[in-house]
Length: 424
Image (cartoon, rainbow, N blue to C red; front, side, top):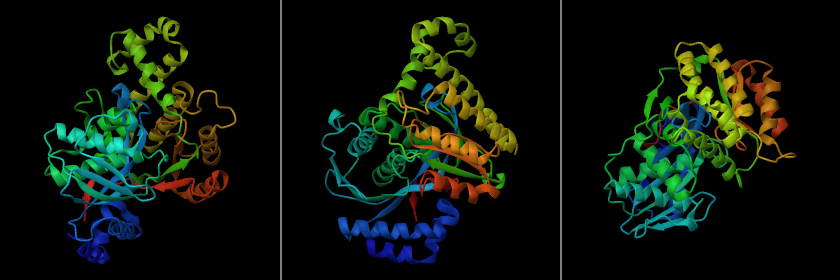
């Protein structure tokens, strides 16, 4: 569909209904985003191209903090904040993407090798996704895309994973006849992030964004993760899901994040294994004196967190599916406590004056006063924390959190039932 036809389509009432599965009661508010996206495309690229619209959601981790890189279990969900694109194939060998608020990003498909000079850049993610598709037999071609996002960078909702899933969906649809499924797109995104971007992330973020809905994932075999959607209507829980921005930057924290899997995998290596999931908990516990001596106490504490949080995930799933919200909230609190005490991903090493994440969690504790639950969200150290707030408390909780941490700190989210997708 060309630009003119898309503008007519978006202005029609049925377009809002078509995107309601993505945004629920926020569909009307998001319709305008697609109109603005087309305006951005028109200002930047050709106005007579055959355009397709795409969407990839942010994600929220609900259970299993830092368990995925040890081939553990997680509970996660896609949310109603997303990254969207208007894309069209081009008859050259270049991918050109303009993300709103950023310079044009362009790569040539003539060279898809890893470039160390591109580490930690958008170009590396695009090149990595394209290279992985090419290795699967896809004849990746050039394309033009305009992109906008409501998944703010540094929000803890995985803007990078949403972007990777978005690019994966574009290439899959335009050049590969949608042959690759949602889990494979997630794996392609992780490959790009690990190999081309230079970040040793697990697979949870990309899978939650790509597959969508409330899901549990078992990464015992990361090449074939077991993904199951939960038959749960979270709207009936009486809770609102909130993400609270602590306003701390992720900059210069790569070493902090990387230290978690490095230390845990050193412990696994003691047993001749690659990751902790391959080591029986009883065997680990028996060896704690030797492990403390060889790797230090933090590595042991972080490993204890892995075993405990990995066991909590199926318990959370069972509680949700049986409607036992009290048990679910208890487990969320336990996970948060374990992350702070054992995993130690709240305060960056040596930070004294700046402990933004800790302050945000302390405010959740104070404002909830025993109700609901709260925990660190995602990687930790910076970004966001997560709170499950009883509906009757949500207005006061949001107002106070925004006043204490700054306007726009508290975001009330809905779980989105659709992952990465073609729109309209």
